[in-house]
Length: 144
Image (tube, rainbow, N blue to C red; front, side):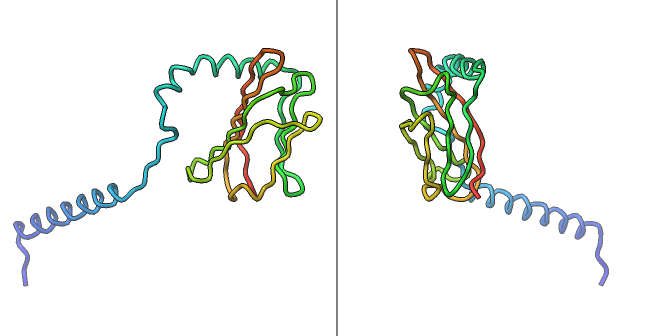
Protein backbone atom coordinates (compact mmCIF):
# COMPACT_ATOMS: atom_id res chain seq x y z
CA UNK A 1 0.00 0.00 0.00
CA UNK A 2 1.35 3.36 -1.00
CA UNK A 3 0.56 6.56 0.93
CA UNK A 4 0.29 9.72 -1.11
CA UNK A 5 1.07 13.29 -0.01
CA UNK A 6 -2.54 14.11 0.77
CA UNK A 7 -2.88 11.20 3.20
CA UNK A 8 0.38 12.14 4.96
CA UNK A 9 -0.69 15.76 5.41
CA UNK A 10 -4.11 14.66 6.68
CA UNK A 11 -2.50 12.24 9.18
CA UNK A 12 -0.14 15.00 10.39
CA UNK A 13 -3.03 17.45 10.74
CA UNK A 14 -5.17 14.94 12.68
CA UNK A 15 -2.23 14.11 14.98
CA UNK A 16 -1.70 17.83 15.68
CA UNK A 17 -5.41 18.39 16.45
CA UNK A 18 -5.49 15.40 18.82
CA UNK A 19 -2.36 16.72 20.57
CA UNK A 20 -3.88 20.22 21.01
CA UNK A 21 -7.16 18.78 22.32
CA UNK A 22 -5.25 16.60 24.80
CA UNK A 23 -3.33 19.66 26.05
CA UNK A 24 -6.57 21.65 26.46
CA UNK A 25 -8.15 18.76 28.37
CA UNK A 26 -5.13 18.48 30.70
CA UNK A 27 -5.04 22.27 31.27
CA UNK A 28 -8.69 22.31 32.37
CA UNK A 29 -7.99 19.48 34.80
CA UNK A 30 -5.16 21.39 36.53
CA UNK A 31 -5.98 22.68 40.03
CA UNK A 32 -5.10 26.33 40.68
CA UNK A 33 -5.38 27.91 44.12
CA UNK A 34 -5.08 31.60 44.84
CA UNK A 35 -2.35 32.51 47.27
CA UNK A 36 -4.86 34.71 49.05
CA UNK A 37 -8.46 35.69 48.43
CA UNK A 38 -7.91 39.40 49.19
CA UNK A 39 -4.81 40.05 47.11
CA UNK A 40 -6.03 43.48 45.94
CA UNK A 41 -6.30 44.71 49.53
CA UNK A 42 -2.90 43.21 50.37
CA UNK A 43 -1.36 45.02 47.40
CA UNK A 44 -2.62 48.35 48.75
CA UNK A 45 -1.08 47.60 52.17
CA UNK A 46 2.24 46.45 50.68
CA UNK A 47 4.21 49.61 51.59
CA UNK A 48 3.42 49.00 55.27
CA UNK A 49 4.79 45.48 54.91
CA UNK A 50 7.98 46.87 53.37
CA UNK A 51 8.37 49.27 56.32
CA UNK A 52 7.85 46.46 58.85
CA UNK A 53 10.39 44.28 56.98
CA UNK A 54 12.90 47.15 57.00
CA UNK A 55 12.44 47.47 60.77
CA UNK A 56 13.12 43.75 61.25
CA UNK A 57 16.13 43.82 58.92
CA UNK A 58 17.64 46.74 60.86
CA UNK A 59 17.69 44.75 64.11
CA UNK A 60 21.11 43.58 65.32
CA UNK A 61 19.61 40.34 66.60
CA UNK A 62 17.24 38.64 64.10
CA UNK A 63 14.34 36.24 64.59
CA UNK A 64 15.75 32.70 64.38
CA UNK A 65 13.65 29.68 63.42
CA UNK A 66 14.78 26.10 63.93
CA UNK A 67 13.41 22.57 64.26
CA UNK A 68 14.47 20.70 67.39
CA UNK A 69 13.11 17.81 69.47
CA UNK A 70 9.74 17.64 67.68
CA UNK A 71 9.13 21.38 67.93
CA UNK A 72 9.46 24.40 65.71
CA UNK A 73 11.32 26.99 67.78
CA UNK A 74 11.03 30.72 67.12
CA UNK A 75 13.71 32.63 69.01
CA UNK A 76 12.81 36.32 68.95
CA UNK A 77 15.39 39.11 69.18
CA UNK A 78 16.22 39.76 72.84
CA UNK A 79 16.35 43.54 72.37
CA UNK A 80 13.01 43.76 70.53
CA UNK A 81 11.11 40.71 71.70
CA UNK A 82 7.46 40.56 70.70
CA UNK A 83 4.80 41.95 72.98
CA UNK A 84 2.06 40.90 70.56
CA UNK A 85 1.80 39.49 67.08
CA UNK A 86 0.82 36.74 64.72
CA UNK A 87 2.66 33.92 62.96
CA UNK A 88 1.17 32.70 59.67
CA UNK A 89 2.32 29.32 58.38
CA UNK A 90 1.71 29.21 54.62
CA UNK A 91 2.10 25.97 52.67
CA UNK A 92 2.36 26.85 48.95
CA UNK A 93 1.25 23.42 47.74
CA UNK A 94 -1.82 22.95 49.96
CA UNK A 95 -4.06 25.76 51.24
CA UNK A 96 -5.75 23.43 53.74
CA UNK A 97 -2.44 23.05 55.64
CA UNK A 98 -2.13 26.80 56.31
CA UNK A 99 -2.68 28.00 59.87
CA UNK A 100 -2.02 30.92 62.21
CA UNK A 101 -0.60 31.08 65.71
CA UNK A 102 -0.65 34.05 68.07
CA UNK A 103 2.65 34.98 69.63
CA UNK A 104 2.86 33.72 73.20
CA UNK A 105 6.48 33.89 74.33
CA UNK A 106 8.28 32.16 77.17
CA UNK A 107 11.48 34.16 77.74
CA UNK A 108 11.59 35.36 74.14
CA UNK A 109 11.02 31.89 72.66
CA UNK A 110 7.93 30.25 71.20
CA UNK A 111 7.65 26.53 70.56
CA UNK A 112 5.09 24.96 68.23
CA UNK A 113 4.56 21.20 68.10
CA UNK A 114 5.51 19.68 64.72
CA UNK A 115 2.33 17.55 64.78
CA UNK A 116 0.47 20.63 63.49
CA UNK A 117 2.48 20.53 60.26
CA UNK A 118 2.55 18.33 57.19
CA UNK A 119 5.97 17.33 55.93
CA UNK A 120 7.37 19.73 53.38
CA UNK A 121 7.89 23.42 52.68
CA UNK A 122 6.26 26.26 54.61
CA UNK A 123 6.63 30.02 54.49
CA UNK A 124 6.66 31.45 58.00
CA UNK A 125 5.31 35.01 58.00
CA UNK A 126 5.90 36.56 61.41
CA UNK A 127 4.47 39.94 62.37
CA UNK A 128 5.17 41.34 65.83
CA UNK A 129 5.15 44.58 67.75
CA UNK A 130 7.45 45.97 70.43
CA UNK A 131 7.23 49.40 72.03
CA UNK A 132 4.85 50.67 69.35
CA UNK A 133 7.12 49.63 66.46
CA UNK A 134 6.00 46.90 64.06
CA UNK A 135 8.20 44.19 62.55
CA UNK A 136 7.73 41.59 59.80
CA UNK A 137 9.97 38.71 58.80
CA UNK A 138 9.35 35.97 56.25
CA UNK A 139 11.32 32.72 56.34
CA UNK A 140 11.21 29.38 54.54
CA UNK A 141 11.29 26.18 56.57
CA UNK A 142 11.25 22.52 55.58
CA UNK A 143 9.43 20.19 57.97
CA UNK A 144 11.18 16.79 57.95
